[in-house]
Image (cartoon, rainbow, N blue to C red):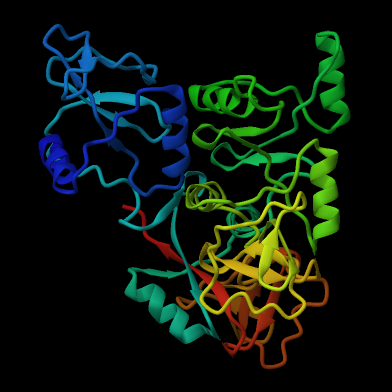
Length: 414
């Protein structure tokens, strides 16, 4: 890790090493680097000779900092900046001999509580031998779900969310919450109201959570509970529904004092792709209706002029509403649609094989002791492999199967 080399790499791309000059940018960095395999992120800023002042290369002084509790430690040698694993800042040497490559190989994600490095993949056919070979080629193995904790994490990062209906989720902190208002601030009443909801009054116990509170409670531009994307002055909430019924969706937005979001520009399209990148549901319902053939309008009659169609869309037929779907491109869709809009591949292939009746083992012979069977499973027959499917519960499945699936390659941590 040599900062001069890093800066030169940015310069070669016509850019400069990014600086974090505000709470808002700090929060954005936390979002885009969620799940990174590298624990440290190099950012711009250099300690000056007085050992107190930090400046950018153009001489601009830094005034915003998000120091870890132990930093800065005032060292003469430690003149450069990194974001650490918990997104606080350390001062560090500008030339280090260790690569600081994190716990996982490049390209793998990391779940700290289980020391679990992984890569998520998709296969158009569930041929387990090919899936295992692909994992091996990545230096890993098909992931084992060996505990309730790991099952829960699979449901979380591949499933439909971990929060009760009506609650929002901030994924980096695994933080489920609702936002409420009260006319008189009586602490006992507030705590009791949270308790009645099966919850407790939220604790802000470290800087990352503080940043998130400041973000989602905003600066007055948005109603409480809504998020703000400042460049577009765009206030929004994200919601999920099991069936794409546009009349119900629009009414729900209206009940919240809002309207179904429209995507009217490339800038807004790009932001949707960013903030919904980790979504558990693959389809995003957006505003726009084809009331006249090939003319798309909002409910107030405004014509849409920006589109981001998938290559063979729109196909019209009886599909008069809009969704963002494959590759974050647009499809026309029936305004009453029974698709549950879950992850694009509903099956997750996992490790384990029934080589002896009702005894499930890994390839190395280790027996599985944890299971999460669907209520009528396993039905055995010629189904010797395992998948997570309905309700995120387990099914036995043929080891060569034409149904598509997601599979997770578990990589040995460094």
